[in-house]
Image (tube, rainbow, N blue to C red; front, side):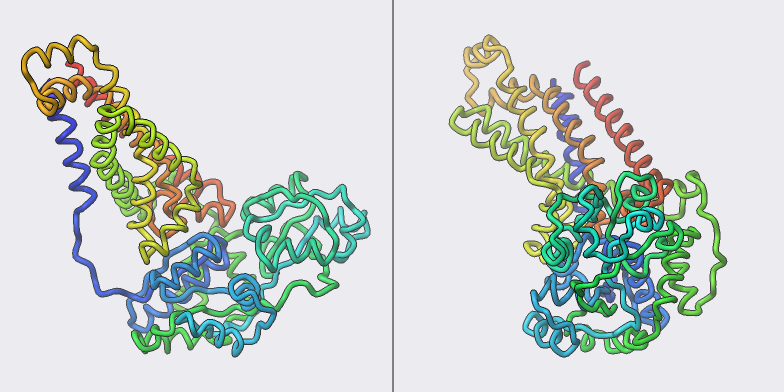
Length: 496
């Protein structure tokens, strides 16, 4: 029994050491964020490469979810700038109709933010159909959709809920129907396969020509002007004058056809985001190449870094969950009055959507990345550990407790020398369940810049690249199996 208890203590200690290991950090670089679609990835990489060419340390936090997540990250200082569009800033963030830079600057200034570096192209929202279907139905503009209620609309989650997206289009054109929700990266395949008939697009999408789509005319001018710009913190020019000067050098440099070409290079030719950015900036053009196979993606150079980040997320949060969950389970087992509230609260946490919890933690922690991700995973890890501890302790035979009382042991002695040793196997089972679940859940942390295998998954979604998706999913599944096997061995040792 002593060995079993020692096994749990050592295991928790190892996890805690992994969670709280501190590494020396360089002075804070300029941090660029980007949304979870190809063009935003590319603009973020162009900004990062531009800064580094100017001798300024820079980091690109890729694929940080939607506009709300990026804006929270910018407001809290977790990032310094990110690419966006004037119409999005006006309608979605500021709830105004004006899209001129002076008006946007005045509205953002009280928040400590500004808008600048007009890149030179516009990327507006639009709705599109397959050319053959549109021709047969005689549909050329958005107002024509009102007479075709049989058409199935597949819209991205952000467009569906944005003030300048579906709500505005549905109201202006009288389109009273319920669209299907599809990730933007998957919608083209769904449209080509005939699963939907209409989708939202960006006007600089490289796949418009490839899939032979007809872009429907916005005849009632619902969509505002969407000039590409950078939203930035007003302290950035003061904190990094050289960096800000380098970013201003991008003003007017990217034409619409340039952007379409870069999107095509990433999505259709299989070139990496950083290679496309370097090619555009003239730092050595990388030849276009067909996407590499699954094996090459799986064992790419970033695998050690992603594995390290994923392990920190999983075991860091698990260590915290053990340190909090086991005492909570003990308290619940020792008091019927506490049992129901503790189990109810830990169960309720599981019902909160993971992305919502991650977004909620950004303003609370004032940062993105590892800290809010570990806190979220810690909260999700509590329930299996608390329930397993509670069940293991309440399941101890009554005669064992009575024997301990007969020996004159007080409550803490009974817990330490009798109950916890008998419950060790059950507690370890709960930790195992939590750890295995955590491996999969940790992939969501990439949406707030925490890295890990989810980084590949978000990139695969943006590019609709199944090989990239599998290159992230397979290591996560393999790690889950390794973690499961590790805890199985620990349970067998406890049983012996």
